Amino acid sequence: MREFLELNPPEKFWQVLKSFLETKIFQTEKIELDQSLNRILADNVFSPVDLPPFSRSTVDGYAVKAADTSGASASMPTYLDIIGSIEMGVETELELKSGQAAAIPTGGMIPKGSDAVLMIEDTEKIEEKLIESFKSLAVGENIVQKAEDIAEGELLFKKGHKIMARDIGALAGLGITEFNVFKKAKVSVISTGDELIPAEAEAKIGQIRDINSYSISAYLNKIGAETKKVGIIEDKFESLKTALKNELDQELVLISGGSSVGIKDMTIELLNSLGEPGVLLHGLSIKPGKPTILAVIEGTIIIGLPGHPASAWTVNNVLTAEIVRVLNGEKAPAALGRENQKYLIEAELTRNLVSDKGREEYIPVKILKKDDKVFAEPLLAKSSLITNLAYGDALIKIPQNKEGIDKGELVKLTLIE
Ligand SMILES: Nc1nc2c(c(=O)[nH]1)N[C@H]1C(S)=C(S)[C@@H](COP(=O)(O)OP(=O)(O)OC[C@H]3O[C@@H](n4cnc5c(N)ncnc54)[C@H](O)[C@@H]3O)O[C@H]1N2
Ligand code: MOO
Image (tube, rainbow, N blue to C red):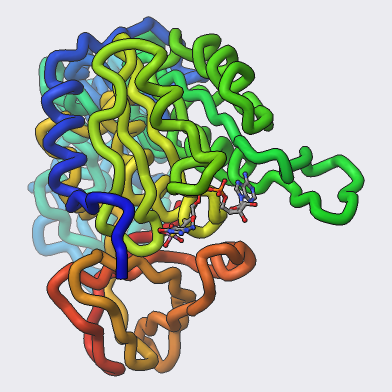
């Protein structure tokens, strides 16, 4: 069959993108802790203090010297004099001598001279200021030591770390409330096609609701980009040229539709008319996603996504999401195209899959769990359909040199966020 496009392997796309991105200067900005969820650190972050700042009890009970409880049991207790109580939130002046104990709440400051804490249930109060210990303690028992969490000057997070909700607690605990992050990737998403109408519009015969600008903007926002949904632009040279020109201050522009070889597909000519160097690659050897375009115009990356919604979605997952991760500072340009271990899981395939040799194939799957085993159920459909994607949790990649995968084989899945 006649092939219209020269199909380039994904590696060729990575190579061209790497050479462009490796020279790019990434902008940073200072933000506050409350705004930092999902942002990417632009510097290494070191602890400015010891955490905890003083040794603390992990239980309610009595601060003691471990040696004073040596050999203690329910039938042979040891006896300790209570010299006072530890107050929360203030420095204690108490200092224990041999045979002494101080009442302490969970989290209270360990007084000088103490090296262990007796749990209240391992004691009996004999008199107002005398207790019995039924337990023999080891040094350090029920104590979290000063700087045990992290010491002053120790590395907490590396540059490029994505801040998760759990990290925000650690930063708050250390009093780090302002820091530098990479600016979010600035991305615009355009849909083209005279048949397209916005989602909220009434569809006349022949019209199709725009899917791609909605699904792709949402996905890229989710992974940390600042995405502008431009909407639908009519399939006319001048209208598209004006629309694209307006977006050239962005770092990445996605244009879905008009990437194939039909009579109306003027995208290539249009991109080449906008500036240098123009279209660098047209045709990607993945399925679906064949007609993908890569262009660079005056420092802005332009990706022409295939119009079919599942194809656009697949290229977005495989190619554009990777570019956004680099623009966001989460991934080094040199690592472009390398699998992200964070998003990979393994599962057993529930049916045979066949694939054409010569193109990497991506198939959405549903993840199922049965008897503690994880299974991948392929969702097979034409790339012009969308609902399959809505049910898919992940993508399977069938490498270019494989003709298929057998039922029962263990496959690697990339989670769809
Ligand atoms: N003779 C050939 N025809 C086609 C080939 C080919 O190699 N030879 N490739 C096919 C493949 S594969 C794909 S994918 C599509 C890609 O087409 P385009 O990128 O040029 O996109 P359009 O022609 O504009 O649209 C294709 C299809 O998708 C619908 N579409 C487009 N945009 C949206 C959107 N934002 N939301 C929902 N649906 C959209 C559009 O209505 C068309 O049905 O080309 C094949 N043809
Ligand atoms: O490449 Mo098309 O994108 O296979 O549907």
